[in-house]
Length: 164
Picture 1 (cartoon, rainbow, N blue to C red):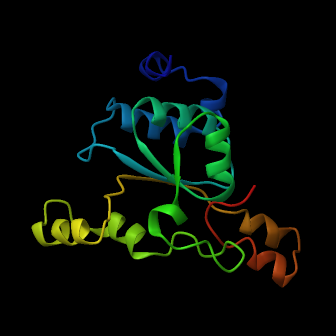
Picture 2 (cartoon, rainbow, N blue to C red):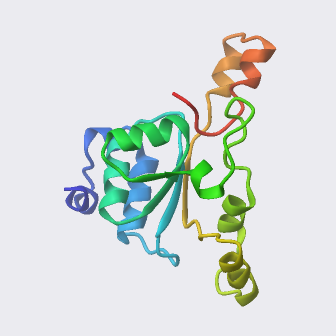
């Protein structure tokens, strides 16, 4: 269904509400050329619009999903197999969930130069898997400020992903 929707240019209502999710699905499906095959995705979103279709699609394509908190819970609810970032890194979420993905196994998977033998050897040595796709959106910081949120409220809205 997703393939047909993407080829015909008439995505489902949930995908229409979130064009970036549709583009992501097209990239994974290879209807949009991408030089890096997507095998592992890091998914952490505050606004979960379109996550149903995206999660099911990634799972159907066999993409290994790394996720945190509420996003991981939502994806599991949809029947997706998800590896918690804390399990992957061996480090728990700390500071009330503010520190989840700040870890060499995550950043190494994002920043390693593909095709660089030294980087690839270090990744193997440290158990780092390449992360091919990052799906995030931001907390509504601008809205919190615009609504006159106090300092504490505004600070809590500076992040990616989220517990919601």
